[in-house]
Image (tube, rainbow, N blue to C red; front, side):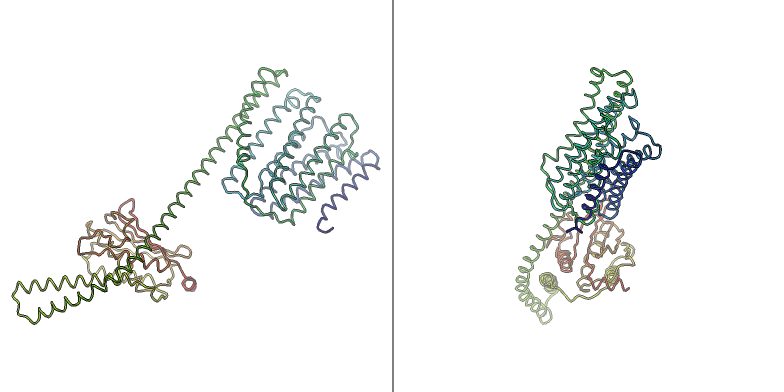
Length: 578
């Protein structure tokens, strides 16, 4: 138990030791050195631990700990300035003090760190908005400090009014930090709640104690190392112990649905900040009773703040619009993917149902058709027929043969079954198909180019089925190119990760309805030249191989078929070995 809370035990021991020294040591130079260095060491420990967490922690936590390290580092620089004046120069801290500005602004990164909410999983767009919110917060507090405090610190020096305004503004800033810590502690769980609660308790102690310390300074009862420093040392030790302990805590980011009213809070605060600027400008012109240089400075600060915060508001709106367009794009792609999947399912059901119907019909047609051909051939060979009768018999035989080929195609389509799959070379199948088809056509009319990347391995497939698939696609492309007077067919084969992509791109007239090319009996060829089942069979083969096939018309003209085939583990291993 003691080991688990060792850092908090050390913080409590440090605080008690400081309290003992403050109570029993006499006011003097040695006590000043002890008090200043004790605060500096504790702050350095907290800043160093935050920086270490920023390096070792993942993702959004890195930003949180970086902002914590920045805020504590600013606090360290202020404490180091105190050490320089009181220890090395043996002088009291001047009032006003330049490092009062640093002390004031060290709270801004702490507020931003908590408002960043690393305990909540964010999308990339939300990260960008959080960064803009931090910059707006920093810009707003910079303006507020310049508007309220600067006129009495550097324009027209007035120490009494400066201290009053500085303390009030610093207290408001600390109350803001307490508010965001309380909200974070209430809306999270687990180790994050423990972390925020410790930081909240330390900040409350510091804010309350600083009020007593300020009053002791005003009444002249304060000196470095006095008991009034105890509410200053204790919170620093507490924060450092919390940061060191957090190195051992599991701090996961979780999904969290924030109330819609809270989501509107930040934009509303940004709008309120923008609207407050002209109000403060009008107040300066009409009601500010300070001297002319102070009023001029305040008007200038208002104008500069309007330009800077206005730019941030524009940037925020641009970021939100960009995020919205990205979301719309993702929604469109998801819709198109779902629509494509639905079409594929409909196509599969259609082919399955049609296959069963065709199988029965083709079987019934094949027997009487076989009889017609036999009787026609017997009549032709045995009977003495005149020329007109012979021509008629020949027509009967030819039409019966064509019908029988159609029935064979129907049977082939209906009886598609997973064939034996082995490792096949796509290059061999493509070159064989193009060579067979090219030998049947007019030379030079269709130029075929085959480009296959060197890293394409052999794939696990049925060689005969893939050959018929390539043959069908290439034949259709060649027909289209020839009909348009000649052109090119480019076949490109590439490996994309664990898939092989084949593209058949021609320069023909394109396809009238590319979304229907895989429908059974859909054909654009003349009657007698095509059955409309070829590409339907191709679709079934590719789906049986676990792949996808799509068709589109290219913007520059022509059609393109794309086949995506997965690589099996055996194919990947063979490709790697090759």
